[in-house]
Each structure stands twice: as structure tokens, then as C-alpha cells.
Image (cartoon, rainbow, N blue to C red):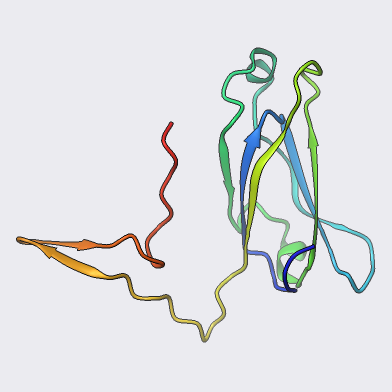
Amino acid sequence: QLGGSRPIHSLHIGNDGAAFVEVLVGSSAGGDFQVLLPSAALMSPSESRAGAGPRRVRLFGPEHLVGAGAKHTWDRLKVVLSQPYCQSRPFGLSFIRVFSAPEDDEAPPEAPVRRLGPFTLRGEGVGSPPRRPPG
């Protein structure tokens, strides 16, 4: 259950050993779940068998999402994971972040600016791009 009903613009998914992920969306008003993100590979078959790189992050933007699912407003999310290549290890997700598109009247917040000699530095505020985890 999501906090509110808004269109979904993008997803950030942190893997923990799953080979494939599929995301479905629905509404608490009723109806069937619809595909938002068709089955996407999080690990290759060889990586799955070897257990290599199980904790990667995949970013799914609007170009990866099914058009009809991304245009409506949703408040429920169903995540389907599978790992057909290695049944001996547990698998799951470490996190999933759901982003909605900024509304037209919302202006992006200004990032704080600092000067360091001839250089201008932006602070790591709300308007800064997200930092990638090491590794």
C-alpha cells in the first residue's frame, strides 16, 4: 500500500539475490493488478548460479515502464521476484523506491551554492542528484 494515489514515474530497485523482478500496480478502489514493469533481469544466469553480484541497484525510468500503467494513479504495488537458476540460496530485495513525476506547478528546489576560489560548488541538498553507493 502506497501513501497516496499518484502516477508512477520511475523505480529504484535494490536486489538481494533475485534473478528477475516484475512490478504490478493496482488501486484500492478495485480492479485487477496491471503490469507496470514487465519482467526484468536483475542478474544473469551465470551470476545467479555463482552468486556473484547479488546486491546491485537497477534504475527503471519512464522508458522501462508500461505506458498505460505509468499514466494512471495507483496506490498499491505488487512485486513478483523469481530465481530459477539457484534454488539453494534465499533471495529478495533490499529496497524499492517509487517516484512520481513532479507536478507542473512544482519548481525544483534550489541547491545551495558555495564558492571555492574560481570554482562554484553545489551542496548535497534536496536538489542534488542521488549519490551512488560505493561498489
